[in-house]
Image 1 (cartoon, rainbow, N blue to C red):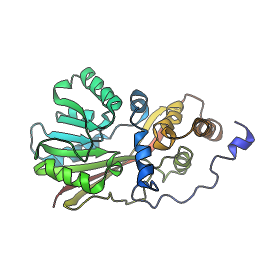
Image 2 (image 1 turned 120 degrees about the vertical axis):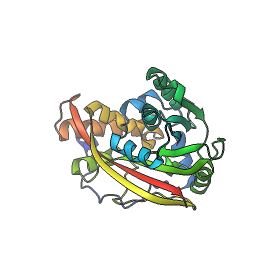
Image 3 (image 1 turned 180 degrees about the horizontal axis):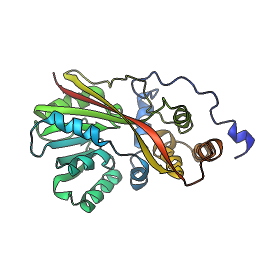
Image 4 (image 1 turned 90 degrees about the vertical axis):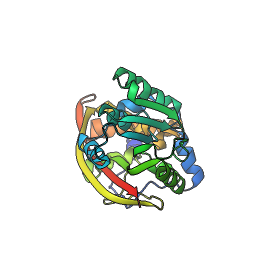
Length: 279
């Protein structure tokens, strides 16, 4: 990387986000960014982290005594959360608008011998076509902010069975750690929210539990360079901008922080879980 290129890497770190959710500027821009995920699949799945066991424990405890809870995962992507819940014995219906992402989830369900309790269907979160009262647990991981709030909230209330729970969960980089904060800025990680943020949900849903876990994801430095390629900013950017992001992350991790290329490092994360019941 040249000296001029290095100047494009953010210098002084700005304040940690004050947002409750990502900002898109306009509905058109939001739709453009969302479409960036439609063709994603295996590469996305390889570098995005899963969810801590403690978070799954809290979700399932809220459902109660159902022997095999019926779960509907909205915006399921490659099934990071859906497959983890299927692995806990739940019967899971994973919905997403990206067929390529769902195909990754189906393949993994078969490989994990979970195909009998895992179904993946192309459908928007706002119009699932599922039967009313057919879910004990509705989940949305890394996805709620992409939906139309009022429409998806109404659909959740419709498909939840009596006593059912909505679980909204986000993995975010733990930007309270200074080097992670700067990494997030270079990677254009737009889903970093403020401390104590609350999701924007529609009428008729009442927050009953909030749970936060801090943990670390250990993997190769190159995986953390590649992680930027799963962000909507990168997916919708021009080739020159994409190359600049990757070059800057290469410089930051390997030259500035001094990690040997390909060595394993731990990335601090935080996971925020919100549980709602129909009011």
